[in-house]
Image (tube, rainbow, N blue to C red):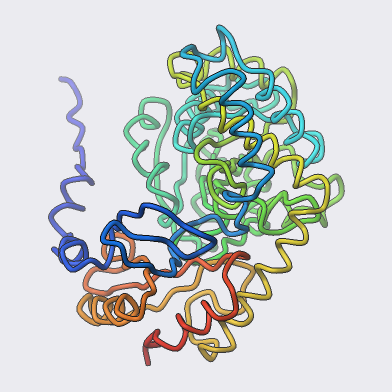
Amino acid sequence: MPRTIERHNWVATRVDKTSDALTRAIATDLTSHVFTGREGKEVTLADGRSAVEFISCSYLGLDTHPALVEAAVASLRRVGVQFSSSRTRMRYEDLESLERMLGVVYGGRHATCFTAVGSVHLGVLPLLGTGVLPSYPVSASGVTFLIERTAHASIQVLRGVLEQIGDVDRFDCEDLDDLAVRLAAVRDAGRTPIVLVDGVGSMGGLIDVAALYDLCAAAEGYLYVDDAHGVSITGEQGAGFAYEEFRHLPGGLPASVILVGSLAKAFGGSNGGFVLLNTEEDTVELRRFGNPLIFGGPIALPVISACRASAELHLDGTVARLQRDLWRNTELFDSRTGGALFNAGTRSPIRGALFKSEEDALVAAARLRKAGVIVTPAFFPTVAKGSGLIRMAVSAAHTTEQIELATNELEVPA
């Protein structure tokens, strides 16, 4: 008789457990804002009022840097908005330059850019799990994907795809002993483990990627790190959190670690993501078989040029100077909130005030909104059911006065 497979619909579970808090936040003008203009971190909203935003993930302010703006405008005039073809058919020369410069930033790794970080996952993970990439061999017995419970939704949503390729399990990085047991079991079963994690969490937290690497290496597996929020914020050339965590090792970034980054956050581009692989042979196979690269359109041409300009700023020392401004601002934020916020004292640009109830978080967001400060209120499944989070993204572009305004009005949970 055919085997009956019990399937769990996690989307239905999420919907069933989600309250109306986000709907209420939208209805009361606490989120889902529409803006018509901006200068620095001050935005003009559709109703004509202005506000200081702590929402954008452009942690270095590069998205409005003159070099990026001018590069995008020049590209727009030279080649237009878009070239509607996959990169396997034709691609813009600035994309070649961008990928070469990313290789320099990341110590000689081979970069391939996609339209989004989610597309990177969709393109790379099936090939990694199938053993298509030459320098990432997998066991003939197959692979097991182990997804960290706080990994970004763009990874979580691929569970069904990954289950077509190998076993899929979840783990909690707060319990590394449990992960070690699971990794050993996968290895003993003759399978190759592939551990999927974030670097800097989108709502807070820094993952100990070095400790995870040690466990993966002992189990002869791979560590796949989505460092979208960590790119550019640290490192002499802006390689980011995860890459810098491995700089102390002989040879730097281990060959069994796959790094993924975003072009759309601290890097300054409006969209795009990239993956770093070991060899040119790996990139050839990725560009041959990576589904989003073959059957999807390219990054918009002006965005490619803006990202190329950003890569130049990474290499010429500009980004290192902006990092100092960012960390000065986070230190000011922490000192004015008594170090009581989530992520206080860490090398993350994200600060969070966690409230015991959704109602308390809504009240706190409303107080900030009244004072002319807009933030991101977050609820389940971003945080535990019933609680609420005020997420504030600190940037190098924030002024001292703007940070003082926000911290004056922020109610720090007891």
